[in-house]
Length: 194
Image (cartoon, rainbow, N blue to C red; front, side, top):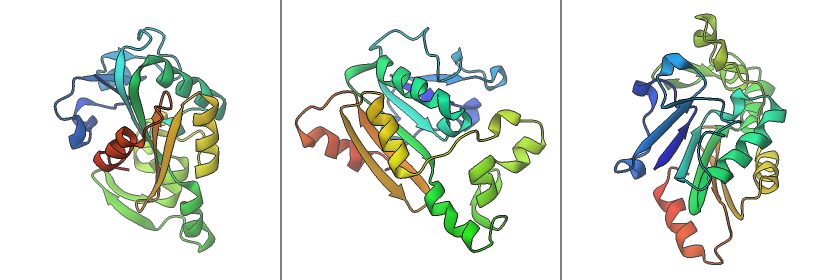
């Protein structure tokens, strides 16, 4: 079972191919997304301890206030069973800073299914969606590699692998405990979109 944190609508809940055969448990704070659980990812108290095999959290942590992030990461760790893992993807503000430093704040960086995405969108949230009333799409905090690593470590994850992606994102693989073996970790890193 994979917990899709901040899943969005069913049509937007696509997971990497790695999870094709997995059951998906969708969590979102927005009832219109029709999730399996309407909840903040900072409070997954209705999900039993150790009941989840994987947490997929793509572009959802930045929608929390900075003080809520540690709670969300502790919740991810709590719901994972000992051999589980979390895959977390956030915008890389350090990489985005180059666009700002070169006065390209509102220049499209890439084309998404919803339209062009700018540095402004990656920092403060996707403007067109917010303009249409989806204020939950606003970004309330941000990450560079070191603070993300520090937060994952403080949440108690035993093994953490960070990768910078060429899409101006940081991807993290976090395992609840250090297995002492790199084989499983390396296989996950190779199989997941890190």
